[in-house]
Amino acid sequence: MRLALRNPWALMTLRGKVTFAVGAVLAAVSVLLGQRDALLLGLLLFLLPLAAAVFVDRTRLKLSCERKVAPGRAAIGEQMTGTLALDRHGRLPVGVLRFEDRVPAALGPRPRFTLQNLAAEWSREVTYTLTGNQRGRFRTGPLLVRVSDPFGMAALDRRFTATSEVMVTPRIVPLDSMGNAGGTGSTGEARPQRLGLSGQDDILVRNYVRGDDVRRIHWRSTARHGELMVRQEEQAWDPSATVLLDSRTQAHRGSGPQSSFEWAVSLTASLAVHFLAEGYVITLFGADGPLADPQLGDLGKATSRREAITQLTDVTLADATDLSRAAEATLRGVGSQMTIAVLGLMSSSDAAQLVEMHRNQAYAMAWVLDVDGWANGATGTDASEHGSAERTPATVLEDHDRAVTLLQEAGWRVVRVTSQMSVNDAWVRMTRMGEVL
Image (cartoon, rainbow, N blue to C red; front, side):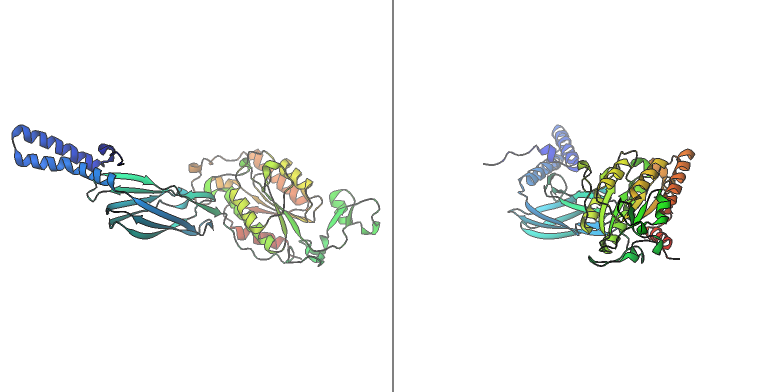
């Protein structure tokens, strides 16, 4: 059974419709004036778009497409290659095929290409380049195909259904080893000299428990915390770290790839990958709790390199107004030896919660972003385009400075980060703070 012809007018392009209309008018005028030669020309112009529409409609475009993007995961700024393998089987040749692959703007311009003067059967492979300009998960495709006649009088659009998922991960910067802050220790090897950032003064301690030998009381830590603290017994070197990313909307400025939040995600990813390579067990937290599954409100779980990158690829800004949920989750979970925090705009209450998180841990490091630099276009972007040109009130900035001082007084090593600093610069500043004097 033959399929009914589609509406020829709907298949005609603008060129075809104009030609059809001109031909109809010319034929009608020629009949009235008795001009036979003009009548033949008018009929030709009138029938040509109709014939093109029939040709396009009756062309059985049995076209198959296999698509892939390699690599499927790439960091911001890296390039990926999309490949389309096209095969056509049919009885009639095709005049012109125009292709357009749907690609999100975050991956670059949409690739367009044309194949013409094609036989009834053929195979082609087309490649194009994608660039990851923004962190996240994206889907390329489906491929759009436009069939047209050689004169461009009629066209028919068709669409494939297959798509490909692409993951653009945060930019990860390789970091040099912090010689006295971590190591590649293995289970069963006691390495007490690596438990602190400042040498022997930072001995791993815990709260005094009734029955502990008073000779193990660590008076320096007792004075710092205001309660009895004792040296922990030497134990196997299985280092662990809690990594906290301040993902609150109110704590960041700017939007898109040039925002303070994206810079913080890049630093957090670089730190996570670095400490995992150094042998640490890492647990990732955001403002809403564990990044692994914030909806469950669980205690967080250790993550692998791949999982950490995936979690930080998917992380988004949260509506939380403070860090209480993250602090509660870390306090309920299994204690780690170190707290690592990448923070935005803070308040004194935020700092108090962070100090509580650090109470039973050996040491803590924090990178605090001066987010107004991102809001005011210091990274080379126009803040007014991102809706973040408003200055932070002076009272909020003063409270932010008090929060930083509170962390420092509680034993945190704090690096103030400006928008002109690179991730590596921020890391180097921290490593220098950890040098043994």
